[in-house]
Image (cartoon, rainbow, N blue to C red; front, side, top):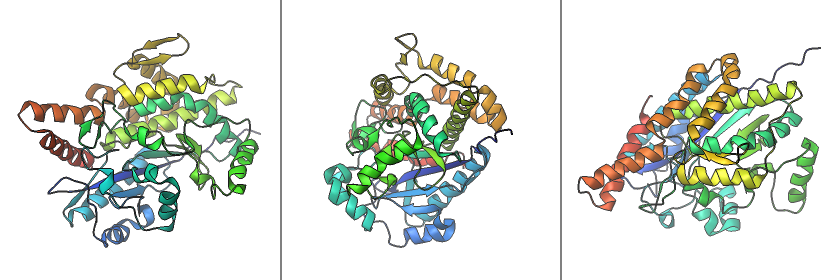
Length: 378
């Protein structure tokens, strides 16, 4: 009997920050009707987030990246439309260029109340947004097997998605500052490795029995088996400001998942490297994006990121063809040509500074660019 291929369906979640169009600062007290208006337009696919200045959207289950794109066009466009009624705009960036976390208020929900009580300042600082990509894998054992192998590629995905170079009005020197905030929470970072789904669940159950978590949704690794859906959820990426970048990386996650599955069918595996080595590339992605290269573990040296990406695209070429996303995968290279959101933000700041703007005015220019880029391609 021929084994049926997993569906490799897609679901994408994006988190946005809401800014006041006049001040360009994060809105501290958004209108109480805002979420309701979004729900009226978009249904249950839009929700509030931890902070009142955040909003989250999630696509329906999509059969391919073209469906995912259509969904994100509708969802981003809907949030932009509703926000505009109130003089606001969403920005798809993982940090705000100048608003301070101490000024923000968390959403009044039991889940968020419990989180801030437990995590204290580590949670209150979470003025950060991300993009999560779900890939449909209808087999528990397969999700665990692929999770251990796909961890190698997490730094590469982060490097292509960076959108958080600023924090509190200052250039942090990192292309993705977001993870320095998120990593302060427990149960974050690279995923653990397990030999089976049963072993994974035994470990989760220990935390549940100890009263530390209610379920596995409180495990916030960079890559995890979803607690709600039969999917493997990639969580390491910053939210992409431009829709084209978000779709390109969604396609890449899908293709990498299928490539790992193909290896499994041939009784092969991607080599497991130690978390110590992968963490080093993770840090390089946070610090430099793709500017200074990453470690090629086989060669034992830092090589240009373009070389690593070329290899990844070669390895996944058959998968892109099978999944019908060759065009979207090809645009991954475009990210390197024009830069990530972080690169564009820093360039906008630099140009404003060269024109005589003061630091706050430079940050204002960055917000304006983020508002424009968030709507680009809709």
